[in-house]
Amino acid sequence: MTSTYVLSQVANGLILGSMYALIAIGFSMIYGIVRLINFAHGDVFTIGAFTTLASIALLSLPFPIAFIVVVAVGAFVGMLIERIAFRPMRGAPQVTGFIASLALAIILESLAVMTISAQPRTFLVPDYLNALVRFGGLSVRVIDLVIVGLAIVLMIALVLFVRFTRVGVAMRATAENYDVARLMGININRMIMLAFAIGSALAAVSGFMWGSKYGQISPFMGLLPGLKAFVAAVIGGVGSIPGAMLGGYVLGMSEVLFVGLLPPEYSGFRNAFVFGTLIVVLLIMPNGLLGRSTETRA
Amino acid sequence: MIGANGAGKTTTLATISGLLPPQSGKITFQPDHDGDRIDLGATRAEQIVKHGISHCPEGRQVFAALTVAENLRIGAYLRNDLKEIERDIARIQDQFPILRDRAALPGDRLSGGEQMMLAIGRALMSRPKLLLLDEPSLGLAPQLVEQVFDILQGLREEGMTILLVEQNASMALDIADRAYVLEAGRIVLSGTGADLAGNADVQRAYLGAA
Image (cartoon, rainbow over all chains, first blue to last red; front, side, top):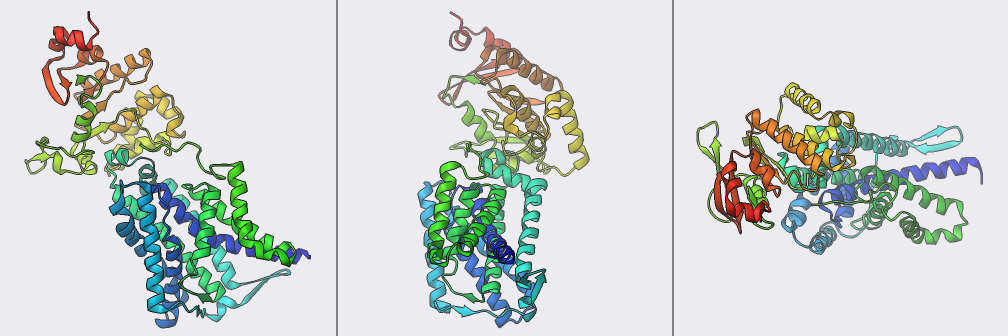
C-alpha cells in the first residue's frame, strides 16, 4: 500500500464526505426548526441530479448556470415540501409529520418512475470537468476539486449566515422557541420555510455533484446517500449544522477508508460498517459529536 | 393583576400579545397611524410587537442558543434604526452591567436573576408603549425580587405603562396605580393598588392576612 494510494483514498473520502455533508446539513436544519425528520430529503437530492441533467442535456445550459438552476429548483422544492407535508401538520403528533413526509417521498419516487422511468440515465458533463489534475503523485479530476471547493465555500457561507446575520439569529431563535420568537416580531413561518429552502438547496447541490461525478442517475439514487446523510446528521448531533458537516466527513472518510484499506472481501460490508459506526458513536456520545445534551422547547 | 394559580393571568397576557386567539370579545389598543383602534384579536403576534406591546413571558425564556448580546438585539428585530438600537443596548447595559460583562455568553449561562434582567432588557428593546410582564419574581431570591421591583418602579417613573402579573401580591399592589383581581377568568375586584391592598377579602385571599 503506497502513500499515494492512501492519499488518493483520503481524497475520495473528502469528496464523498462533502456530498454527504451537504445532504446532512438539510436534515439537521429542518430537524432543528420543526423537530421532524424530512423523509423526502433524499428525493430532493435526486431532483437536484435530474435538474442538472435537464439543464445540461435538454436546455444545453453551461455547467455553472446549471448549478444556479439546481439551487433555485432545490430551494423551491424544499418550500413546497414544507407547505404540503409539514405546515398543515404543525401541532399534530410527531408521528403524523413522519408519515406525511414518508408519503411524500414515495409519491415523488413513483411520480419519477412513471414520468421518466426507473431506468438509470447517463450523465454527460463538459469535458473540462473530467480533466485530470496532478498534485505530486496524486491525480484527481477537476470535478472532484469543484465538489470539495464548492462544498466548503457553501458551508462557510452558511455558518456565517446563521451566526452573524439578523435573519440567521432569528432562525436560531425560531428553532429554539416558536412563541417567544413570535413575541420578538419574527415571522416563524418565513423562518421555517427558509430553513427548508436552504437545506433543500444544499441537498440538490449534492445531487448535482453526485450526478456530475458518477455519470449515472436514477429515481432511486437518493435512497442510500439520503439514509447515510441522515446517519451523518445523527452522528454529528442532529440539529447542529457544524455537527452535520463533521458527521458527513467522518462518515464519507470512514466509508472510503474501510473499503480502500481493508482486503477487498470486506467491501461488501460497506453499508453495515456505516451503520455500525453510527451505533458505536451513539453508544459513546448519545447526543452525537456536537449535539447539545439539553434540548429545551417550550 | 393578581389572582390564584389557574385564574387566567398568563392566558390574559398571551391573548393580548396574540399568542392565543380570544374566544370571545375584543381586545383593542390605542389608535394606529390612521386613528383607528387596533383590534389585537385580529392581529398576528409578530405584528402586535410593532404596535408597541412587548410581552416578557413567564419563566423568562431567554434564548439559550443566542448570546446575551444577541438576545438583546433580537428584541429590536422589527426596528431598522441601527444607531438607536445600539444606543438602547448601551443604555440597558448601563442599567444592568452584568449584561455587558457577559455579552458573549449563551443566554442560559446566566443565573436566574440575570436572566430576568436580560428578559426585561430584551422586552424593552422594541421600545414598547405597553410592557406585559408575567411573574417576574418567580423563582428569584427575595433580594433579587426587590431588585426587579426597583427596576419596575424605575420604568414606571419613566412613564412606561406596565401590565404586571404577579403572585407576590403585596409588592405588586405596592407599586400599582391600578390593580385587578382575577378569579376563574373574570375580574372580580379592581381599584387602585392601595384600595385593593386595604380590602379585607384581598388581604385574606392573597396577602396572607389572618
